[in-house]
Image (cartoon, rainbow, N blue to C red; front, side, top):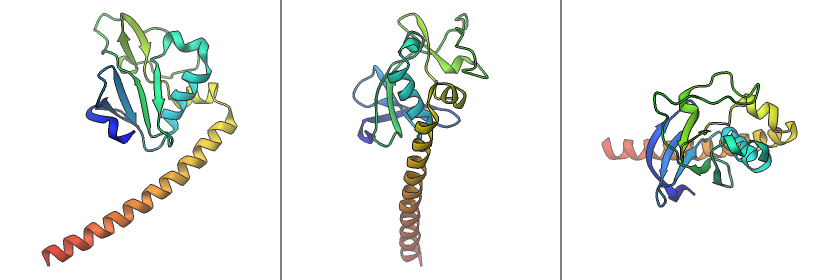
Length: 158
């Protein structure tokens, strides 16, 4: 899925948002620590009663780091932020919503508060274990890469 990632659009506290390289109707959310992407995918696939207030998820990478969603437009100044189910979000801010076909939808629903309400504990535990293993592997790869880069740098400039 990495090959679908286009130019960066924006970033938030835990994720980067990119253009989809081949389809301007989609965006790609990247998060190395998979839980927010996995939560959005789970909620979209399993909590059908909420779909009318959520931006559609299209696909997710096997590891959960990349999530493809429909692309929306930023809210206008006079747009009203809709209510969300009780306990979903501590802070409702305009950047959590987008407008698609004149409908205001929640585009950021991977919050831990939503995860605690809608995703069973055993599934969260499995994600966390998979995430930990994956992060350890990535950190190992990065340390080797950095070590090689440092050695090459020393070799080139000494």
